[in-house]
Length: 274
Image (cartoon, rainbow, N blue to C red):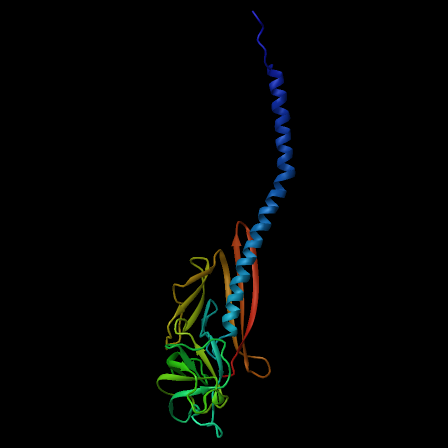
């Protein structure tokens, strides 16, 4: 008979004690480093989310139709984004025939564009001229619907402008405005609402059609721009600065996730000179 080999009880106890000491040591020295890594990654993700959302808001604010921002409270605001804009012909060309200036003393159905456009207007888009009162662009008092965009006809052609906008119906634009500028609004993005939704902890961007009535509260729905939103705030000053020609939107957003909190603020000017 051969004697059985193995560990004694004492040896097992010693091994268990040594293993426990090593595990405790690893927990003490390595857990903070691991926690710090995940905390840093979580903070970076929150910062990236907040920064992306605020930059999106700032881009829309800077390209908004002048005086189009409506803010029912500090949890949301509305604006009308533009996709391009330029100068229209204000008087007939005395050298080249077939010029077509925009007549602001009555109704007009077409006009020449004098400046290159970043994006050409398409049928169904809107042209806005002289929007000095906030609700006018929403009610339709300062906008017309585009029917077609084409080169000016001969004789004259390119000599009288880079293009001609024809409206779906003769439109009366504000007669008191003589700046010669117009904005083009995309038919598929007439109005944009930014909403801080406390119930769902989200920041949302809602695209909707023109609504003539000024909003009394924040609407529901929209695309989620940021999640884990603890608080956010919107402040709008329509007459920022000594010249009172540039509005200012100030935004603050605070995100919270896994005990990590990240707050960012962002400001953007909107040109309120039509």
